[in-house]
Image 1: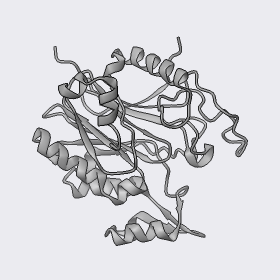
Image 2: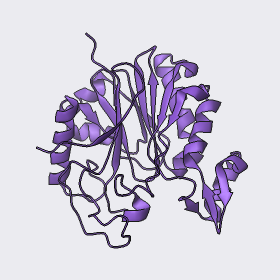
Image 3: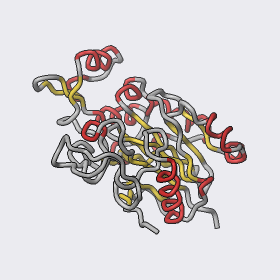
Image 4: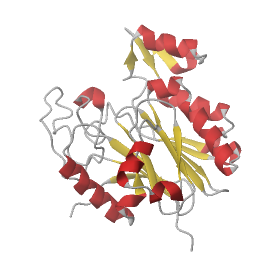
Amino acid sequence: MNHVELYHYEMAPDVIAFSTTRRGGCSMGCPVTESDACPSENYASFNINRYCGDSEEHVAHNRKVLCRQLGISDDCLIMPHQTHDTLVACINERCLSLSSEERQQMLEGIDALMTNMPGVCIGVSTADCIPLLLCDPQHQAVCAIHAGWRGTVGRIAEKAVRAMVKAYGTRPSDLIAQIGPGISLDSFEVGQEVYDAFTAAGFDMPSISKRYAKWHLDLPECNRQQLIASGLMAGRIHLCGICTYKACDTFFSARRLGIHSGRIFTGIILPTRG
């Protein structure tokens, strides 16, 4: 059986936090010919997102490989169907007791998950959008956030912090944050309408944008600023610095491979209590 190549993060003792790479699965798809920098097939080879056009058989196999490697059952690998909104769902015992159909319905339209249940892997899917992980070591709670440009404009990072405060009594200053692989300022060219949306939402545009031939936006920095505004300490917010557009040989990039391609899964697991 394959071995998944994971990009790990250090967040808190015994907490498992990671992003998947493109390596270690069985997915294939159609050959990509748009760029010599990304010559492999558009789902190759590790993808567990069933909403991006990959075959169900490959997704199921890849999930099995990842769960075995993480030491969890498939029922404990929780991934929502994201819609670029700002809804945050709490994964608790009731959620885990639902049938697969009921759980899928509950996770529809969700772009952030939080939990305080040990041994449960929550995560989000991205392929240029920004994945964020939050860890509250004091209250043993974690959160995974999908922040595309729409979610970023909607301040999903701020909403997720508030949700953790309400659900677990989290103190934002205690949180540790990890910003995972996503598209960088240099690579994220946007239309005037996207720039205007950020302006209208009150963001500090000189610090998150730059004009080349067109406007470019810095989504990782924009989300970092949201976390600081939410009360997180700047020194406890870590950026991996990986641009998916530039590193599409290792991480999926929808802008390089097309929307019908695989997705990175960025997940986090609280340690089981001894």
